[in-house]
Amino acid sequence: MKINRQEAQRVRESPLHDRRQPLAAVSSPSVTAPDPTATPSKGFNRLRQRLAQWLASRSEPQITAITDRAGQIWWRAYNPRTQDLKWLDSEAEVRLWLDTQPCF
Image 1 (tube, one colour):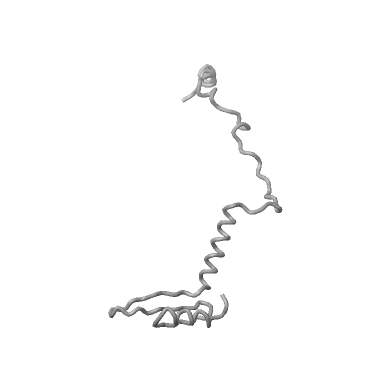
Image 2: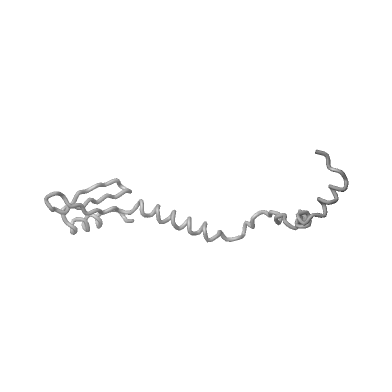
């Protein structure tokens, strides 16, 4: 299909042609390097805080109360730092075990 000059002129004058904006009006601003003295964003701080909490929780002792079929409560105490695992009979024994563990 060949377009003549009159057809080309009609297309240029159409309402769709008028709605176009110059490229400079829609282009994004130039990208600059980040400021090395700027403080980290809130999202980064939140991520750093959660990572620190997760790492701290992995080094804290884990105490779990478990009831067997007979209704006896057993306490499972685990220290991830020393990999020490104990099964204890009472909460008092758990407290004593915690007191004897290295500082957390």
